[in-house]
Amino acid sequence: MRILAFRTVEGPACPFYDGGMSLVVTGTVSIDSVYTPHAGHREQVLGGSCTYFAAAASFYAPVRVVAVVGEDFPADFRGTLESFKGVDLAGLETRAGSKTFRWGGKYLDNMDHRETLFTELNVLMEDPPTVPGSYQDAGVVFLANTHPAVQLGLLEQFPSPKLSVADTMDLWIENERDALTALLSRVDGLVLNYDEAEQLTGKNNTVAAARHILEMGPKFVVVKKGEHGCILAHRDGLAALPAYPAEDVIDPTGAGDSFAGGMMGSLASGLAQGEVSDPLGFDAIRRSLAHGTVIASYNIESFGLERLSGLTADDVSGRFAEFAGMMRLA
Image (cartoon, rainbow, N blue to C red; front, side, top):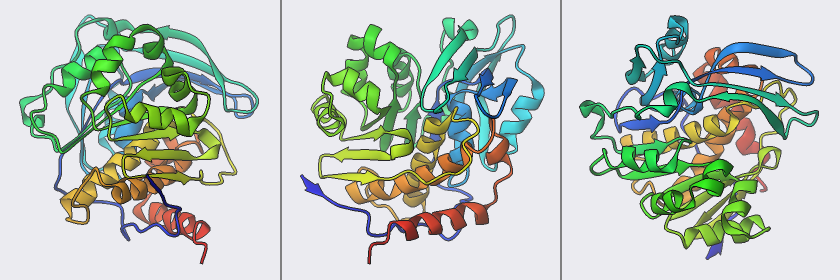
């Protein structure tokens, strides 16, 4: 296994992309209430794993959303998602008589940890959404966090993706180990945080945990470490990437999902434009982590999608160039 450092990171001059390889995300769309120690709180804001992923990925590639909400889902929330270039909501199902998934959380002083105040699963307790027939030709599929059996059922509705990646969380590791193990044998990649990697493997070293997960099926594993960046464990190498040194951390909610959106969006864009021949290649995934890092660094600067909603292609390109310069050693 070779170890490569980031000497420099190449990226498109303009992240926006107007067509090509189909990227689909499945997961949750929610109504959140967030409390922070320094910036106050916001109630009834648009959230969910699909939401943050789709907004972030849209800076690189068209993205199709597969999720379900209740009839209480505000029309202006749908409008916010549709305002992001290339976000397709034909797969966002609204169910009459049901309520949207709701979550509330409170961040502690260091912003690295939070406590869940409430979780109302609501429509998530019902049957999962159906993948529209027009989506089933997807070349790139991201299974954002939800029950692993649901993730696997959704994955099976895509006949031949070139790349499939999943996210997970401590709840499923603790209570749904068999279903998660079955999922890991079917996906190309896994994204999770360092606590979850250690919980899944029983190893208290992040690198050792990531390498152990490779033995469970995925060809690569991305371990998120918050302000300490991320680690990529791949069958062809190992890489580490720092976080962007953000000054204003307002709301970390959705940072991991926006990171994944930037990562997967850049891979889909590279495939469509012929810049990436193998989406599972070590170098392609390594470069994509930098795009995810940059998008996530914007996401944390405000509540919900407020910061991403105001971004331009020039903003993203400029910060990417700055980030690449920070890692240039010679």
